[in-house]
Every structure is written in structure tokens, then in C-alpha cells.
Length: 323
Image (cartoon, rainbow, N blue to C red; front, side, top):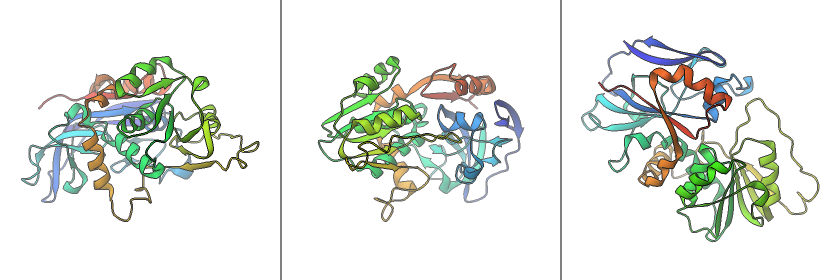
């Protein structure tokens, strides 16, 4: 009998037993090594803030139950294949699976983690994949002046990828001065929103705040683009789309990881995008995005603290017992 984490009602989670069937010929049995929790979508789900209009869109690939609860939700899972095709047996894999000790999925649903990427770092693969898709959408050019507003898990992942890009300037912008150390580890500049340099060709917004999105527009050069990565759940936001928004011909566009960017969709699929993310994770600088670690048994006590902001975190890693 295996164990899984369930959200029983908004704000209340528990670990329960679950039956795992033996794998079929085209399936794998995976023993979980690590899962990851971000303070973005997953804590929003934990608080019960998914709007009914988005119930279908926001379903995780292997979610059980329905929003708002009871639901088994999660999508950052790294494990070891214990049964399956010979080419996968004994390999470390990433899967968009919730928090569960062992599970069975189609072999096509797992991606082998490169030997150069530690399993503990590979929990970031789903988030780095989001960053890859966002930058496919944004299509920055060599020498661009870029700001990333919001030094959470997504914003930091975008900044980490941009640190390898020949941009003219990359700033990570946040109101929390404690994020400066993360920016330094990633190799990008850090600044408070009030001190951020303007005349940006591109601003990537990931703070999930109305003020952050408004500041994104203020920092743009004429005809610049603000790429919105934040998801607000059932909250409404207002924007200053009067004044010089039109005369400066600013662009505000969305990006969402549920579909491969149109700029690559004709020749790249989900597996290709995930492969790019895992290749990027050979860079040890991404370790700065893991801000804490707890045991699986602690999840019912951990998630309320993450969801309330009592425990500040980027990616919080969950470790599982061996064997």
C-alpha cells in the first residue's frame, strides 16, 4: 500500500493510503525520490482559489479528484523506475505527477533525467520548462535590455535562463531584498522596483501583483513588450491602459505552459521542451532556486505555511524514504 497527499478541503491536506496496480507492458512503476512545491499555482490550489471557469484548464496531467477539493494535485516529481521497459529500468525520471510514494504511468509520460543532473535538482524541471516556453514566446534578441519582475520560482527560473543569454542587461526585480542573494547566485543583477532601470525592450512579469504588472509597463521602452506569466486565480487586477499606453505602442501578452509556444509549435513538442529544460539543469546555479527541504510526512503541516506566506520559499523540495 502506497501513500499520497490529498487536499481534502481548501486549506486542509492529509496523507492517505492508495492502491497502485502492477504496471502493464507499456507502463512504468516509479518510486518517488523527490517532489517539489512552489508558492505559485500549487499554493493557490491549496487555498481553493481556482476559478470555476478554469477547472478544466488547470487540471494537472495525473490529477485525481476535482477542484476545489478533494483533489490530489502536483506536477514536480522525480523518481526511480523500478519496473518497466529495459531501457527505463533503474533510470531516474521526471514526471508531472502529484505527491505520492510510488505510482504507475505510461512509459511515455516520464522523461529520463540526464546523468549530469542530480535527482534533487531535477524537481525544478517543470518550472524551468515554463521559463523555456515563456522565452520562446518572448523571443528576446541579442543585446536586449530585459527586466524580470517577481523573484519567485518562475521569475528566478526565467532570470536563470536569461543569465546564459547575450542580453545587454538583465535585472531581477523584487520588493524583497533577501532575493538579492539568489540573483547573485544566478548571475544577474538585482534591484527594487523603484530603482529598476527603464527603457526595457522586454519585461517578464511574474510577481502576481497588480503593482508589479503596472511597473512592468512603466519600465518598457516605446514598442516594448511585457510578457505576463503570473496567474491570479479568481482575483481581478486593474491596469493603467490610458495615459501613454497607446502612444508608446506597448505590447502586453500572456504566456502559459499548457501549450507549446506558437513560435516553436510546428517543429517542437512537449517532450522536446522538457528535454531543453533538463539540459539547462546541468547548470549548478539552479540549486539556488531550492530554498528548503522537508520529509513527505510533513506535507500536511508544510503546505498551510507555504500558502499563507509564513514560510517564504522558492521551490520547497520534499524528500521520500528510500526503499
